[in-house]
Amino acid sequence: MKSNQQSMTSRVSYAFGAFGNDMFFATLSTYFIMFVTTHLFNSGNAAQNDKMISSITLIIFLLRFVELAIDPFIGNAIDNTSTRWGKFKPWVVVCGTVGSVALIILFTNMGGLNKSNPLLYLIIFGIIYIIMDIFYSFKDIGFWSMIPALTFDSREREKTATFARIGSTIGGNLVGVVVMPIVLFFSLNQNDGTDDTRGWF
Image (cartoon, rainbow, N blue to C red; front, top):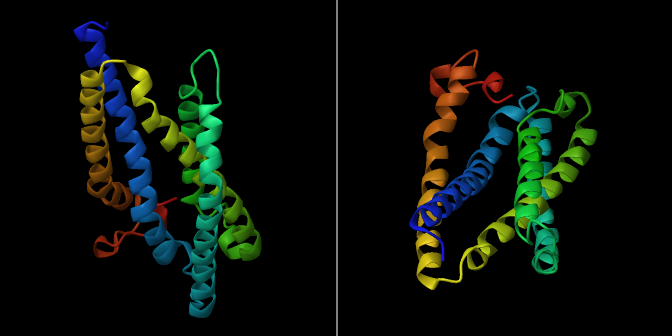
């Protein structure tokens, strides 16, 4: 049986993991479309801007169906994993890292490709988005499936899950508090609180 100190360390560590997990999701779900619609495509050609935004939206919509088809295989792959670090940790660490890098790239104009070569931008966007989405799914499923493996004590699992939910709630809500001030801070022109492209990339 774990000591109280070890148990608390596990709970807090897992809570920090949940904190980061939900910060990732909240950033993607709350601010990515805002970034695309207000800053990524602002060439001055309204028709071209609308076309690119519609294309991005369509790509995301179609990739959701791909994700639905892949998700069952993700759980199966995790269940059949056997490494010296366990079945969950490799997925959480590796996929969390890859997904985070992919998310950062999505919040850029990819070196100006959105204007210089829109078609190439859309192709690369689709590839990076599905990579990010799949790796996030691996990390998310692996992370939340880890609770039963942490301890055989049902009460300890409940406490760990409670800590995790607190961490995830704080992480998800903190994004809404800190993202826009950070974007405004790095913006060259704050535009009465609406920021500019420099604040995003």
